[in-house]
Image (cartoon, rainbow, N blue to C red; front, side, top):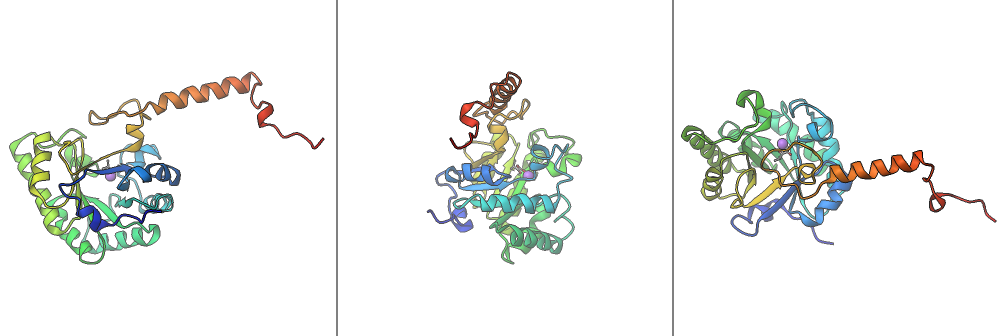
Amino acid sequence: PMRRLTVPAIAARKGGEPIVMLTAYTARTAQLLDPHCDMLLVGDSLGQVIYGLPSTLSVTLDMMCAHGAAVVRGSYHSVVVIDMPFGSYEASPQQAFASAARIMAETGAAAVKLEGGAAMAPTIAFLAQRGIPVMAHIGLTPQAVNVLGGYGARGRSDAEHAKILGDARAVADAGAFALVVEGVVEPLAVAITEGVSCPVIGIGASAKCDGQVLVTEDMLGMFERTPRFVKKFDDMAGRISAAVAHYAADVRGRSFPGPDQLYQPKP
Ligand code: KIV
Ligand code: NA
């Protein structure tokens, strides 16, 4: 079996073969994605996708640890990155270290991800200098939805463009091994990718980024409504509905279980 990729191996992919990343929240999904991916993200998007929450704001460290451990158990190739949930890292570098150390100890993951640009640079440096690889997440940062006022694309004005480019440089200089840039206008994503020395993973960003990430359930077509930046590579919602309708009809028509699914007494 292949040895698991490492954080330095990912960092060294800057400008090289694009980095493939998807979210995973469960062991079985991790098993299926792992051979095709370089990194698996246990995203706090699990709040909406798994738990039906209205935003990521009430996702807890307990949830991230439970799902993170499952994804590490279900994978052996990809670098597993675990989102730090809202409220677990913003207060101080010390708070962030305690939360990240718990995540790494309980899950076995190699890295954490946190949202925020220049304001989080001291925290990123604090963790990186103490053995915790950090992926930063800038641009559209969903945990800041109440400050941003929604989930619209960022970087349309010159001021916002300059601010987000500054965020990218700040987190890269602080020692982030990679950064996610989400929901920004394409020229800004290109400027960020060209302007920092760590790999830039895009989501709603640019094909010129050093890699791409999507929420797996989004790209599989599990949802009716998804952001513009999601390409649906399948229609799993439609296929699941059809399979369940078939099952319901078989149960109601007493054609399931059939002979192949039944146990018979010894003759
Ligand atoms: O939580 C998540 O799934 C994410 C990705 C969309 C980058 O942060
Ligand atoms: Na996230």
